[in-house]
Image (cartoon, rainbow, N blue to C red):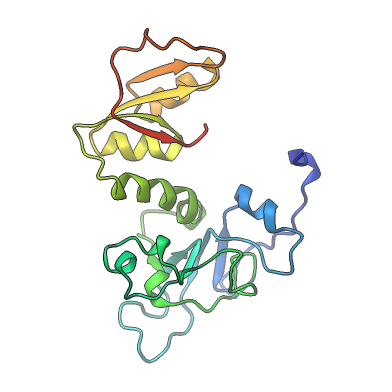
Length: 214
């Protein structure tokens, strides 16, 4: 059984201009690795301090984010079709780079897996997008979600992405406690389904289901 939230303790150091990594999100996955011999975090945001000779898309001072995926081979069928998270040689959180994660002050990262953060997005909001945001957006992209789709299931970020894409967004949750929130985020329909077996009362079937508990 997982410990309750009040039983989990992390030491988090506030970022500053003196340290490249300014913000880090905290994800449930960090709990899995918190007793391992590694630096935690995979939702980082910071500033480029130095770069190698072959870097050509980033410069010193750029705000960047980095997340779960650290590297991949770059030439397998998965990498060549934008599905590098499925690369057989991928290196993800918990698989490598154990000392260069967002809970540290610095990290050395491949340019390919750093993402420019627009000036109108604060680092503290951009950091969680490196995992929760990237993961669900990847699902929407890989499975070719389009404005004509009626998308159900979802989570807070998926609701916003799908709504902005023009989809018909249907949220399923356990109770009505989050109905007001998700409707403001862009959902068109909401159904509380805890203990419900018959869903015939829904307006019409969905054709895409994203399971991200909310």
